[in-house]
Image (cartoon, rainbow, N blue to C red):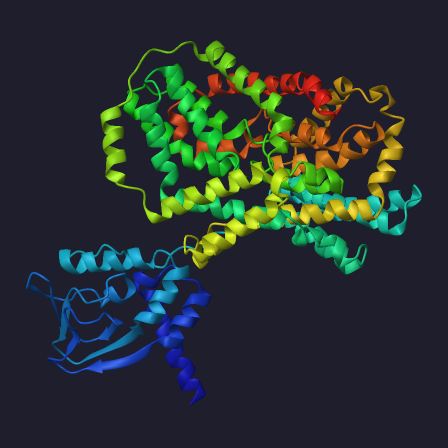
Length: 617
């Protein structure tokens, strides 16, 4: 009996594999599908699928002949050995009817099983529609044949070197640390940290994986208490990230951001300068509430495309390139200027002493960075004129923009909720010194409010919050706290104190040091990791030179946004990947970017007198 059942399942699997509809499903998916299949028989004249009845089953014909009746009343012989594809699609009822003309034996697959399968086999629905088109058109659109398996991709030389280094370097670090007199715990932690950095350098895993591996290793070995290693997950950073990500998702999904962009374009003067300014302002306005330059770019890039088309600009022209520079700068320039405009800012603030963490919550971070923000904005305008000139006057299609805005109609409840949430967070964070409620708790209240009002659903909570980035940042927070717990930051401060005595507490000499360390790390590390590692290295040096820790982390935040090669900047890779690269001249854009790199250094030096006035230097 068992052998018979085994043979039956094998036959079912073979028949399913033969059908083009299931040709690309995995073995796991096939196994689940076989468990739901039933063998059924129909007599001549019996209806298999009845038009307009619920599409509850898909039938794979093993033997017999059927007559197909289309929605137009045409009757043809069923040539494809399958019917009832509606069960695998979004359509609830059968569009065509089928009747057995001879004894028919078929495999019946329930709709529920097919709907579950479509969650992982994403091409199933489109294949089902192609099958239906084949019935109506009389020509099979689904081609039979066994798909070729993709060959396994061998490790590249870089990956091989990376794994070898990850295996061999940490033990060497441990023995060298022990020989240098470090405690066993400190030497072990440095070995684990070196493996983390090497995994980043050689891109052996996604960005958030190495720090998670390090946290797990630290806990398994017992180097630090779990309260220290997992402190980030109970810190104020978590509610801040959740609230800001939720608000950004609601603003985007509700259409509020799109409505505002249209309104802004209609209100500003119709000149090249103001076209560019509109794109810059769009990114600036999103900066306090979106802790990701990539997220901000995803919102403003469609407006760049619409503006290029509406103005009738030629591809690769100076005007089109200038608009791209404005779009990119709007999303990037304020990244270090607000606590919540860059996710790594929310990580490094936890490295500051408790009193400074309270001081720089809310908008005081921006207050302290305001001169730097004004400097990069002013130099952006200067370099735009230098690189792209005044630009020829070209008018926006304002009548079309007005029609688009009119088609949106009055503000929906979701848009009003998003606007109230934005104002609540912005005003609450700005007045935290008055009401003494942390910006983290304001973000937490905002998240709860969005959930209770139904503006942010369970599905949104799963899909629209960047969970890998949150785990990445909170794991880095745990690693930085572990460094302090083991006394490695103090040891580093003592060891480098004499080496950097030439700084002598002078910010003018510390700035090039911070620039060198950050840029060196950014050659091999992504933006977030490069900034955090630079802060870990520079904070003890700043401590030994009696420099304000916030100034140290702000410099790493600003300098980590500098890049010279495309691979160093994921937002720029996003622009290229979106297909926008065909509209602008890359060489001119990169020349503008190099000038903006210099603007960040100038912003740091011009901020020194202001920081002295605030008592930060």
